[in-house]
Structure formats: structure tokens, C-alpha cells
Picture 1 (cartoon, rainbow, N blue to C red):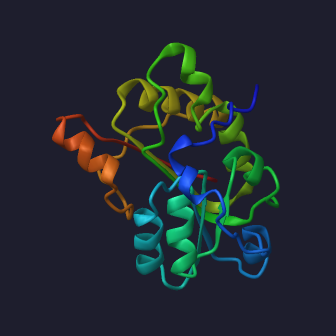
Picture 2 (cartoon, rainbow, N blue to C red):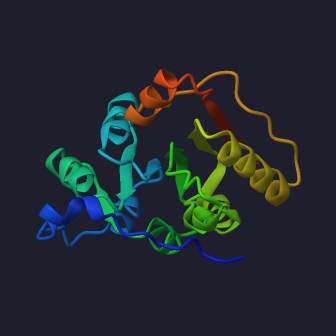
Length: 194
């Protein structure tokens, strides 16, 4: 089981000199038992929406796209820039109440799929850091990626997992809007940790 290959976004060159806070989200999450983590939030709209929906929680984000990181910093939402797999490795066990991974890059070409953020490796960590009774929500409009995610969760949890008939509390993202315009089906997987 290998870690996904981290791909640093080329789209953020003009933000090379972004000044990140010295406080990490690991420090922030140690201050509360009610933490929501949005992994790969892109431009930040999903994290800001979660922050409004779950005002009683501390909502944090991890992203490699600097403009999105800058936007959340301006909103005073705890955020970490960098390789999500490397960052979540550092979390304590049974720490996070909810984890969202909404419309991660599907890396369509077979030779690039090693870059997919959701993998056996990342799910093993996600399952470890989730609190009992907490949940992980994965969403994609890529049928191959969605079924791959379903197989990974079923294999690791040794139980059948069905696609959700509703979106739960997750916000609409710009990637979901693009997918709907293309008439793609939206797949939601919601995994609860026993």
C-alpha cells in the first residue's frame, strides 16, 4: 500500500510568496473534540459552507491550491497547505468527527491514477483518525473513481457500502456544477465508523 504521488499545483505561481500561519491545524484540532476536516477543498467554497452549517464545530481544511488556502486564511478558517496524505498522517487516532473529500481530481488517464488522493493508503489513515460514530463523505462525478472508492471502503471495512441516495450535509461545489452541466451522475459515499 503506497502513498498517492503528491502533485503540486502549477496554477498557483502568482501566490508563491503566500505567508502561512505558524499555527498548524494539528494544534487547532487538539483544542476541540468537535472537528470537521475538508480535504482538497480547491477554492474554499465547500469549507466556508461547512463552517456556516456546523458553527458549533471547528472546521479545518487541507489543500495544495494556494489561492484557496489564501481565501480560507482571510476567513480565519484553520487551513494547512501541502500534501494531504502527509498532513493527515500526523493526526491522533479517533480525533475527527467528520471528514469530507468532495470531487477530488479523478486523474482520468490510467498512468496518472497513482496521483488520486483517495486510495487504500489514505482511507486507512482516514479510518484511523475518525472518531467512533464519525463519518467520511466522498463525492465524485467520475464513475471509475466512485466505484474504486466504493471497493476500497468495502475491502478495508469488510462490509458492503452503498452509494447514498442523498447528499447529506455536503455543500454544492463548482466541480459538481460542472459535472451536472455535462450530465454526469453524482456519486456520494458516506462511511460511518463503528
